[in-house]
Amino acid sequence: MSQGSNFVDYVKICCRSGKGGAGSAHLHRDILTSMGGPDGGDGGRGGHIIVKGSIHIWTLLHLKYRKHIIAEDGGAGGSSHKFGKQGKDEILEVPLGTIARDAETGEVLFEITKDGETKILTAGGRGGLGNAHFKSATQQTPRFAQPGEQGQEVWNILELKVLADVGLVGFPNAGKSTLLSVVSAAKPEIADYPFTTIVPNLGIVSYRGGKSFVMADIPGIIEGASKGKGLGYRFLRHIERNSVLLFMVPADTSRSIKEEYAILKRELESYNPELMQKPHVLAITKSDMLDEELMAEMKQDLPKIPSIFISSVAEKNILELKDMLWKAIEG
Image (cartoon, rainbow, N blue to C red; front, side, top):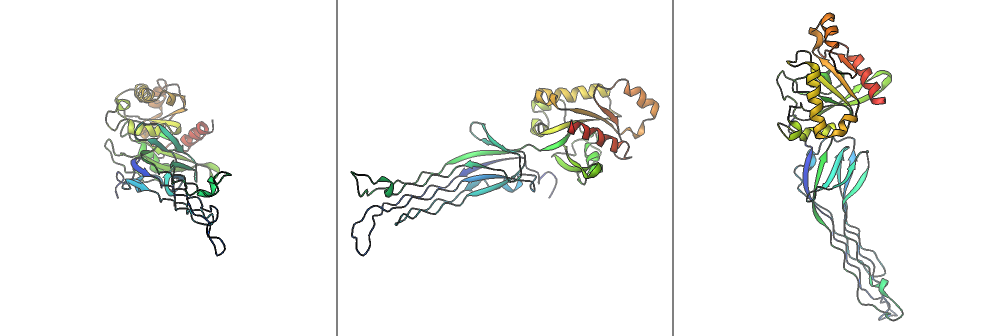
């Protein structure tokens, strides 16, 4: 399966929760009693549709072709105060960072951020009350019971925002995938042409003392991405969930490094100004071709943020970069 086809970060599903079971209108009878009091039990609750977070899932692919999610109806109540069977819940496992929305209004219902966390996406109908509930001084033998509540049928959207400690930000071909492949076990597609990365790649980066952090290679930004140009804001939304943003600018850029950083920053800011509150780190990539004199000269004109010259291929300053990122994450 290709890289593009197995990462799905958006699904629209029709959720139908179970109908509640009807309450029973049974009147007690036994060998001695031909017409006793009410003993009808309550109906069972209809099945919920529940969303559950899982650290073992990275994509919404398994839900892509399940357009209709249907939970089981509740069972009817019985005699002798027997409760109806509860409808079976439908549990949808999703990656951490999944947001649920109402498809019609766009309203955010909740988000899942912890492993094992569960939220009800569509509640099942309540079971009807049996006739035993309606007995009173004036009505000793009620011959009626409540019907079960109808289930709900709604369209929902599940949308994934990748959760990572470090998000890589840069124009296409800035060396983001190469860095990820060097510092982690991730195997992103790498080639020397723009837009190799068309989906986010995640890698776990090992650090000193057995520590680790998660790095996400977000598809390259192009000018105008915040207005939906190119791959557009569909990928920018993943950056919202990162703790630290690592801006990557190649040493051989046709613009100045400061200028390229300013453009990247402007795209993020016009998409979501809150991204400017996150720590920013700058890596000048492909710097194995630079000598000390040229680097010293370039340093004079760098933006005033923590920055470092690196080469993923030559593994130059990679450990120092990890130190900078760890400090920013901890900070």
